[in-house]
Amino acid sequence: MDLIPSFAVDHTKIIPGIFISRQDQVGDSVITTYDVRVTKPNAEPAVDVAAMHSLEHIIATYLRNDPEWKNDVIYWGPMGCLTGFYLILKGGRAPKEIFDLLYRAFDSVKDSEEVPGSTEVNCGNCLMHNLPMAKWYAARFAGYLASNSENPDIFEYPKSERLITEDGREFFDS
Image (cartoon, helix red, strand yellow):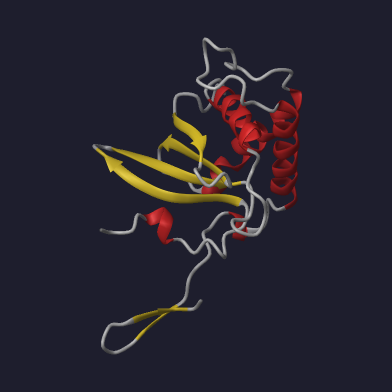
């Protein structure tokens, strides 16, 4: 069975940032999946599950209400490893082109007084929310983005160097 592309990325080298995970051609359209990495995998603690759930609700609501972007948003949701989110958009924009949108989305969490859609009627696990911690993680990531906006490393997956022998065997640098 082939390893899916997101598992083939060297997670020991990923830093928080905004990366293209994959691009798919669907008819005449391009659909782009972004890896929005909030913490450094296997080095920093994963995001608290209740805070991650709250961030999912708050930022999904923000993205789907942004006048410029709402028609391009297909999906916003957490990674299973709780180190970030996947954002799926129509179009083939570079990560730097969605930087402002994501910065504004995470920065807006500070103004949240409640978690949208967190009632028993609207949410499958309405008791698993933590707004104060969501605000903390969002402020931390927004600050990180602001201080690294000119750092190209937050927009491109780290490269793994490979040595390929004459007989076709591959050796990774790690």
